[in-house]
Image (cartoon, rainbow, N blue to C red; front, side):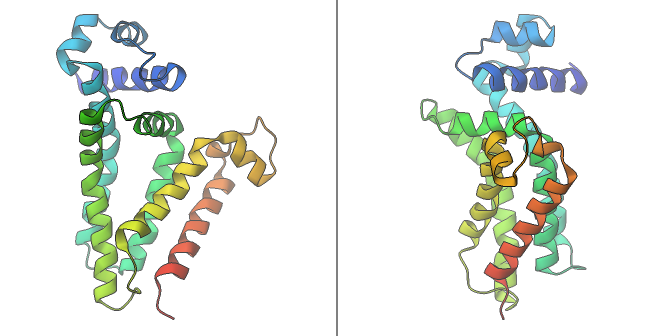
Amino acid sequence: MSIDKKEHIIDAAIELFAEKGFEGTSIRELAAKAEVNLAMVNYYFGSKDKLFEAMVEHKVSFMRGRIEDLEKDKTITELEKMDLIIEGYVERFLSQPEFHKVLQQEMLVSQREEMHNKVIGIFSQNTHNITSIIEKGIRKKIFKKVDAQLTFATLIGTINQVLMSKSMCNVLTGKDPHFNPYKDEHFKKRLINHLKQILRDHLLLH
């Protein structure tokens, strides 16, 4: 099976999960949406849970590579690295709002503990690398002695909250209910600048 076909099935799954929820979507519907044989979906993913895990791994791996490269980069400061991480996450999250909606909806449910643990494991390397950057900044006395893990959670939590409701975003920004803030460059820059300001106020020694 080609990577393109695999991505196509994953994209179809995101659309259906966003529309009908994980529980409300069957493998048969996924196959029909992706226009592939039901046996093909079962063969390559094994189950709906495994498809969900593959979907998360596929989407997370892009940022993982970027974050790993940043962590090793000795030419820029820890603050510059965090700025680039914020830019990368906002760009990535706002370009894929349906995926993150599906992810948040599913992770709020506790019915599938094994799958949830595996999904958290997929995210854990990114979390580890980013907190490592913050902790290095603390050791260099660039940053205050903050809780690195919760600092990361604050950044991601703010982005997730924005993605939870397009309507709420439009209330906060005074836009028409039909306006799509996720495709608006001004809103994206506003969110990036807001997170960078939070980070500076929270981290930098004065």
